[in-house]
Amino acid sequence: MRRSLLLLTAATTALVLAALLVPLSLLTRSHAADRATADATSRAHSLATGVGQALAGARGGGSGGGPDARRAAAGIVDSANGPGLPRTSVVLADGTVLGPAAPITDAVRLARYGRAFTYEPPAGGRTVLVPVQGVAGGTAVVLVALSEGQLYAGTLASSLEIAGIGVALVLLGLLVADRLGARLVGSARRLSQVADRLAAGDLAARAAPSGPPELRAVAREVNRLADRIDGFLTAERENAADLAHRLRTPVAALRLDAEGLRDPAEAERIAADVAALERSVDAVIRTAREPLRAARRGTAEPGRAGPAPGARPQHSPRADLAAVARERADFWHPLAEDQGRELGFEAPAGPVAVRADAAGLAAAVDALIGNVLDHTPDGAGLRITVAREVTGGCRLTVEDDGPGFPAGHVPERGRSGGGSTGLGLDIVRRAAEESGGSLECGSAAGGGARVTARFGPAGTGRRT
View (cartoon, rainbow, N blue to C red):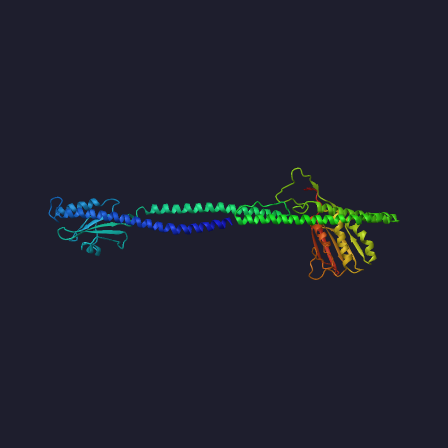
């Protein structure tokens, strides 16, 4: 925008100056020609008086038109010619030319009738003709010829001065436009930076209204929008925390019921599940109460190159994907047997460390297995595979023998295509993306659904 404003200013200023300075330059040239012509006319009249007196015998005591009179007239003409002076000649009535040679043209013949005038020869310049009457032998004519250079003397310097003024005005206009453009661009850039920070999740970012009224109005509306977004998100997070907190009562009741079971092993198993549910509810409440981050976990806020002064570094979360997946598969195995399903599990020997927390991985595995159990007919088998990848990460794949995803359907949050809430796969997607991985949905070899979640390798450094 700044460059466009400079180009527009330069073009507009140049056009305006051309409309003003070109006529001024032409007027200066015309004025110089008129001044030179007036000087030449005055010189011609003065010379005509002197030559007329000389030829009439008023000088040197000679008779009119005699040799002495002509010599006197010739001396006057010679004195009128000099370096830088207009070329001056006198054409006598008999055709004799005193001074520089001059052709006897129709203009000379016309001047012999007693008429003084100025004309422009075809060769250029300007010539002043003044008749000298009352001399012996007829009328003589004084010619004062101005060349192009003499006619327009001084106009080049004036034109250069006018051009310099024009260039100075253009540069001044560009300077003013540049300052104005810098102000406009600076305001727009600062507004864009605030919008980027808001888009990244920094809801504390606010724009300082500056620049023209339109940009100030946009800044105020951006601030108003940020306030509304902040209010909406705060309300939603509070609602989520309240809803999660309400679950504590039925969870506590479940824990009491579990403690009252007669079978100690069954009571211990159910109590462990209830404890896991309580931890999940507490995690939901803590997450809802935390301030909204500018980006996903593990990334810094925009504009920060490192941790804030005094901030405590946090270790990257680590979890054994193979162990978590095996534990959750064992948990769901009894239900799979009740439904006549074959639940296969395959994982490499040893731990498979990924950059994620165990609770998040367990929720992701539960979501994938629960989707198969809820949305495929009884008897449809499922297979859980954990494998390492050459990139250093690993993948978790869950395949089933059900009907698969509907044709042309892309699972997304709030839209599952199977009558559910559509949040299960989103839990898996977030867990994978927060670890630096991704989620892929497709078809298994037998026609069922296949979901592959890729997780990034566990890092050894610290994150803020």
